[in-house]
Image (tube, rainbow, N blue to C red):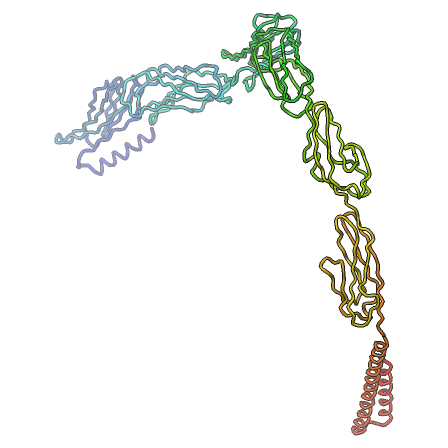
Length: 629
C-alpha cells in the first residue's frame, strides 16, 4: 500500500509539471493472473480529469478520485477480455491505456495410475491425469519420486484457454533404490506473481522386487530304485529375500513338499516310489509375480548285463565274436556300447549287441568293454570287461636287435638281441659252434667277434636274423723301436710306437725339454734330424682309446763328446767375471777423482785446512761406503 501512495504522488507531481500538455493515462493491476470467478482490482491514473473504464467484464465497483480511478472486475470469461482506461482531454482528444487479466484454474482433481509392485530393471508405465486445468499452455505435468521431479511434460504451444482434462503416460526403469519410495503426479502452472500454483495427486508407495532367473532345481535325473537322496531348489539374485516364497514338490506326491525363502531342500527316498517318471516342481513367488521350474526324474530298476567272447585266446588276424546282453532292467531306458582298447566300436539302443572283432595289432592282450548307458543323457551305469589274449609269431626289429653290436673285452653282458612275440619266444644266437642265449649273461672275449645267426621261436612261428658282433678292447703295452743302436753327432734318428687296440688308439709322446723333434701325421713316430747331447733323456709313448690307456718308456743316450761344450761354458764364465771386476775398478777410480777436485776448490776459496781435511775424511768415508755398497 505504501508503494501505491508513492507512485500516486509521483504521478500527481508529473501532472503538475506537465499541466497544459497532452493527457497521460496509466493502468496498474495487483495481479496478472486471476483464478477464474474471482475479482481483480485495477487502478487508472491520469493528468486528465475525466477517466472512464471500458470492458466487457462485470464491474463490481468503481471509485474515482482526483486524477485517478479504480475498478473491481469479476473475471468469469475465458476469452480474451481487454480492459481499457479512457481519458478525455478538453473534449478534443481521447487518451486510453489497455491491460489484460488472464484467468486460470488449478486442477480440480489429480490421479496417478501406477502398480504398487514393480520388477527391477524392467520398464514400467505411470499415468498421470489432471482434471479441469487452464490455460493449458502454462501447465507442467510431472512425476515425482520421493518428492523430487524426475519426469515431466510441458504444453507451451497449446492455445486452449478453457479448463481441460490432461492425461500423460510416462515410462521409466524401476531400480532397487525405488523400493518403499513414494511416487506422485504433480501439476504446476507456470504463472508470474502467483504462489501456490502446484497441485499433487495422492502418492503411491511402491515395492520393487527381483526374480531375474528361474528357480534352480538340483536333483539326479536318473535314480535307481532304493536310492536315498536330496532334492533342492535355489532362487538366485532375488529381492527382497524376506518376501520370497519358494515351494518345492514332487508331482503326484503331496507329502514330498517344502516351503522356504530362497533355498528349499527335502529328502527323497525312492524306495517309496514306483518305477517311472516324475516331475519335480519349484515355484518362487514375490508379491503377485512368480517363476516356475520343472525337471523330470526317472526311477528305474537296477539293470544288469552279461559279456561273452567266443574265444579267450586268438591268433593275430583272426576274428572273435563278442556278445553283450541286458538281462535285467527296463530296456527302453538303456543302450549298449562296445569298446575295444578304449575305442568305441559299436553303439546300439537295444538290449542285445553282437559284434565280430579282429586282432590286428601285435599286442599280447585286447581289452573288450561293454557299457550300459542311459539313452537320454548317455550316463554309463554299468561296465563289464573281458581281456582276450593274442598270439603272434616272433619278430626282430632294429631297436631290440640291431644289425651290428659292439662288445667290450672282459665285460659281463647279455647278447643284446631280442624279439617280440606272444607267447614269449625262445632265442639263441650262434657263431662257429659258439651258442649264446639272448637272456643269459657271459663275459665278452676278443675271439667272439664275427657274424652270428640269431633265431627266435614260439608256438606260432620262427624267425632268424644275422647280427655282426665286434669285440673292442683297450690298448696293450706299446712297443717302441729306434732306427739306430748307436747315435752320433748330427745323425738322424727315428723312434716309432705301436699298440694293439680296438678301436685304433691315439698316440702321444713326452720328450726331454730341449729336444727338437718332428712328429709323424698319426703321432706314432718322432724323428730327430740332427742328434745332439740335448736329445738325451726319457721318451714316453702313450696309446689311448675309449676303453683305456697304456704307455712305454725309451731312454735315449747319444755317443756325442762333451769336452768342447765344457770349454765353451768355462770361457763364458771367465768373460763374465772379468766384466764385473772392470766395472768395480772404474767406479772406485771415479770416486777418488771427485775427492781431489773438492780439495783444490776449497783451498782457492780460503777454507781452513782442518775443515778441508775433515771434508776429505768424510769424502773418503763416503767413498768407502759406496765401495762397500
